[in-house]
Image 1 (cartoon, rainbow, N blue to C red):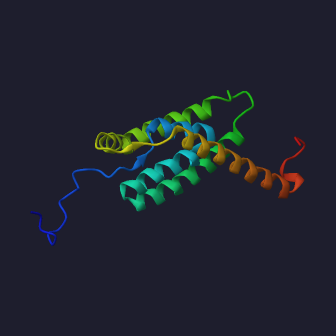
Image 2 (cartoon, one colour):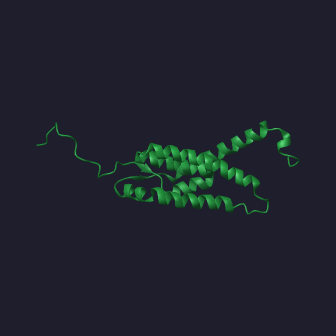
Image 3 (cartoon, rainbow, N blue to C red):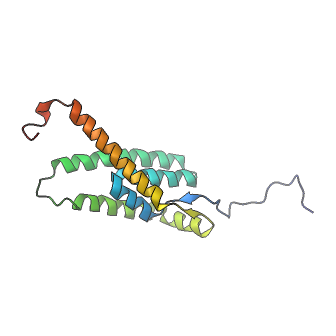
Amino acid sequence: MDNPYAPPANKSAASPRITLYSPGHIAWATFLGAPIAGFVLLALNYRRFGNSAAANLALIAGLIGTVLVLAIASVLPDSFPNSVLPAAYTFGMYLSVKSLQGNEYEHRLANGGIKGSGWVATGIGILSFVVILVALLAVVLVSPEEWFGEEL
């Protein structure tokens, strides 16, 4: 007979059934919506691991990374291949996530965790892309014409 006043059994060995995004999902979102999209999923994983500080840092890094990518893209020569920059930051994100969360992700999945939806990753990537486009359009619309020279 169980003691109703006994503390609950130690369940720390079994991971709770939480939904996590794979390094592939995070890289896919990054490809679709710039670094911020991948860092949003990275932050969601960190929050579900119980690490709010790392989640907050991931969001800040995503904002900074996106601004840097946009700045770099704006100064690249026209002859620079269009696919190189997205391929570089997507591959970099994949390797980073694999290093930062790969073991924890695999461990949690092996202990009952749920693999996140690729559709959610796609949606976050597309939503991030749209938000960035709207922000860039807003900047262009409120900026003085002399900032752009004769190109417009």
